[in-house]
Length: 134
Image (tube, rainbow, N blue to C red; front, side, top):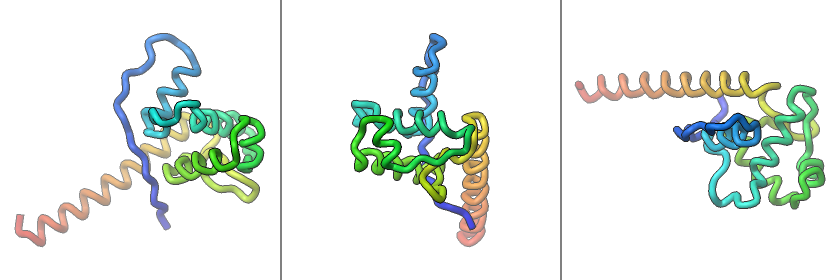
């Protein structure tokens, strides 16, 4: 069964200077995760916390994330929903976790999702073209 993922890929200029924070911000922004409305960078902070725990495979609950980041649980849940919808984060038995254990694998998985979606679109377009005699 395929899950529905909503992800927006944005072509944003890469940061010029080597700075891991700016690079992480660029990566998440390029995946459409962060926007101008996130003034306190709370979604970015939730994402970073999940990235930091991904390698250990330890899920974090919304309460744990809220406590660690000094955010309200409601704010964390709002951002978790966006990360779940994008397919970047998955629900685990005791919380939430990054879909894979590192960012390189994450981009590989996003690419696979995009390829599958494009294949489905192409197939449907061919069917429609055939139906319309094009």
